[in-house]
Image (cartoon, rainbow, N blue to C red):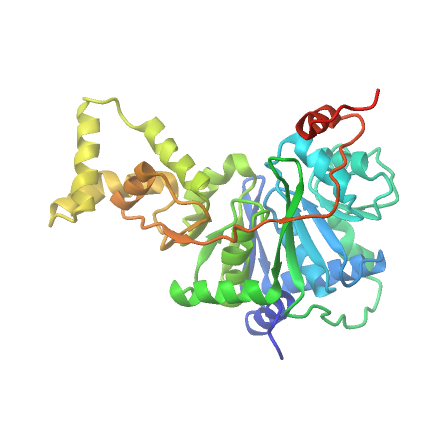
Length: 388
């Protein structure tokens, strides 16, 4: 078999590690596991649903979601059919996200909760397929496009489905990322399957990644760096990809999990650095003096003293951060601040920077704001006056 696309590698891992755990997701405090075989089956069934609803080669599936397995598996289902996955960063400002949706007018969407479902309907009431993850608050919604992710398997359990061929090619676009520029223009980035696999293979070889790694997907795949250096290596090396319960629990889940591979941005590591600072003892206290001493001798690897520092301070500190077992701490994109870099180096975490594509292309689509939401912001930024 050829392994030129992301779905090809999913199939490869399924053939070689069918019963090994591929994905874990924490829900209501419990870690739930999904094998490579189960993940493969979920992707194929999701692809069948997309195909049934009219999704075809070249179409785009938009994702409005925090990190969760459904978004990942639906992306691979879209790729299976030769389509594109377009994650929209949930960190966007509300007005900016509404403007993006109203401009892009998505036909196929995965929305996590009721809030995202409402945003989609506000932008495109005649959306063709809207898959949702969380049914809370949606009992009275009866739009014909809506489909619960949890019901995908049940929709096909009485059917004998023909084998679904992989339509993607290595030169096809796998992911497209959108944003609004400072001048309120629609911009985008694109990554092909070939580029993703090339970047992933470079990381796997450079960091000697194996199928024994534990990786934490604490951010949505709404930035190209996380697709390059987390999603692609996961498929290439066949390790476990773990999803926290939600963003509020990601630090607790990281401590519980103890991942060996962490891919974060400068903001991720800066947040962890500030978290430790907020818990440091008062200056001039003996605890603060001990902390500073431990960081100094451990950084310099002073014989014997560094062992004592590790036992008294460094190990507990790394445990609080959930980095006790981290072998591959990756920094995607912008560099760390000097203070944060010095801190992580002092506790033995050598954060390695990996580049993220910086070029954004300007779309030919005109940004069109929703008529009753962020129009005032739009016209103000454009230097225009709304028609009265």
